[in-house]
Amino acid sequence: MNGTVLVDTNVFTAPLRADRPLQAQYRKHTFGRQIAVTPQSVAEAKYGALTGGWGTRRLNELARLSAGVRVVPVDDETVELVAQLRNQCRVIGHALHQRRHNADLWIAAAAVRWSIPLVAHDAVFFGCPGLELRTELTR
Image (cartoon, rainbow, N blue to C red; front, side, top):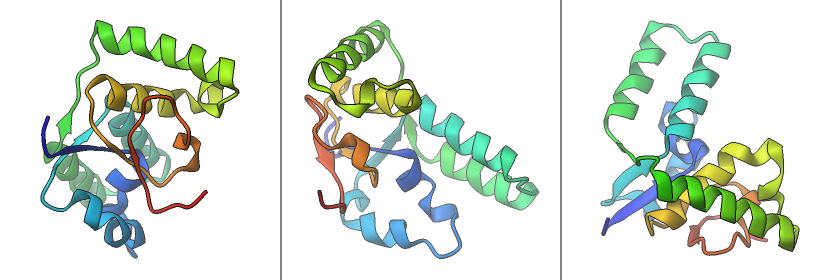
């Protein structure tokens, strides 16, 4: 998946926000690259739209955005890696082992599984074993 980056939900949905600060901030990590997302990011975005009471126009924008990216598959290796990564994170005291970070764990595992850099604006990914993180956050 040369030239591909996996984007976390907040970077994925940035074009749908009125002010779009993350879209501009992360353009250097995404411009000219194939954008991939996990099924978890698509589901999180759709759930946010439903709970936010989005109208038809915004729901259509989300559908177009989702259609324009590659959704990485969840295969047996990914499932195995989620379990292994969660255990590694538990052992080292990394927050990704916690239940409240379950979607983020799957996103990190997908990036590791498919050897794709993760572009994210979420500090929970700092220090995740085996993850190549591209972020504008500082520790």
